[in-house]
Length: 199
Image 1 (tube, rainbow, N blue to C red):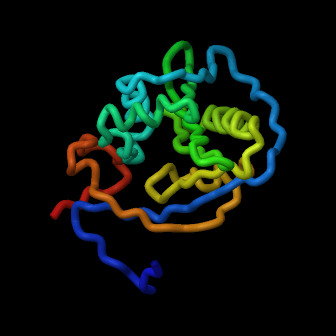
Image 2: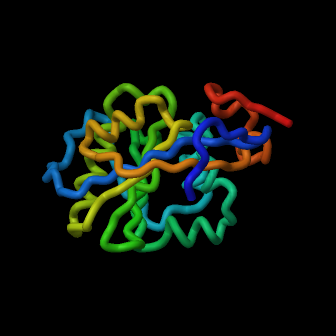
């Protein structure tokens, strides 16, 4: 559907974000990243729903990640416990501080569904290590492409971060959704850089 040129009003209580889709179509042949002392990336087999939601919130609340918070336990479990979905935690001194999810349910592609680190961890290069490990693991089974999407609600450096790591933008979209701070999915103080506009 083609949107009209010019401005489009969004009703109060809703959010709109510009989404950029990116892809990587060739294996860059990365080796396993060297991790700093006390830092590890671990795959979590059949992650418990409660654990997953807690880490998802820890990593994404600032950027208004809400999609997995509004799913039923069964719907979420059917995704994250699927054998074709790999969930990884970035651990620092035994504490889970980052999340990465690779989804191979639609072959021959692999999607980077989520990638992020907790506040206070950004800017230290650990997100880059997590992404490099994701790239390496995504290409194990030689997919047609490895792809993801990011949006204007994400960290301001996210788009450049993915491009620097070898992804190329190929499409844009607009995502409109209820503001999760008004539906109760997230606290009202979440997303401090994104104004809350009520009706």
